Length: 260
Image (cartoon, rainbow, N blue to C red):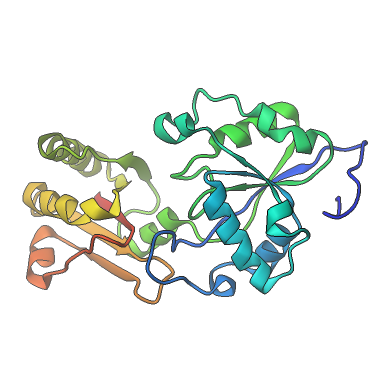
């Protein structure tokens, strides 16, 4: 394995490390890095100097936090950051050929892949880079860290043996209600937990639609502020939600799940 400060080997390819980041992106408070990432993950991130990222600004902010715990191999200014194209953010990874982004790995350098929060390539861009690495024979190594979907599912009380993440539901009210009804029908027919997310400022609108649309026997689970001190998990039927008067705010990311 190359040390980050040494010359790259001509006899081997570098590795692509999938580096998870804290789930506090966009939140008012930040989690202490060493409480949400293992030291081994922090140390590996500190040793890398070539990156593919969702956003260079947030990647530098993450590396600053890493450097406060484990010295970086190079200054933040000297780190080599490549952003995924904007169309990948909007349209998804499926049609994007990311092989050109992995040139340093072909020269023997280890690289890191970052998203803005959580594990890259899960509910975030990055799958195209992983796919390109496999196409080029570059080793892929996911590192240990928080994955919002798995934390929310574990806390939901819903079926963790059969589940699906379906991304975002429509923002237009009528289409949103139709989509929720369809997901509920699938969940009740198959027992498969249906998981989805929303832009935080629409959290309350989505919750209102869910409580209006869901049948009495369906369970709704919501996890907010995962890994933060203010983290909350609520799970129950629509009636239990209404009795509990559980509310969501418009600033904190949330994961929603429905099922029997």
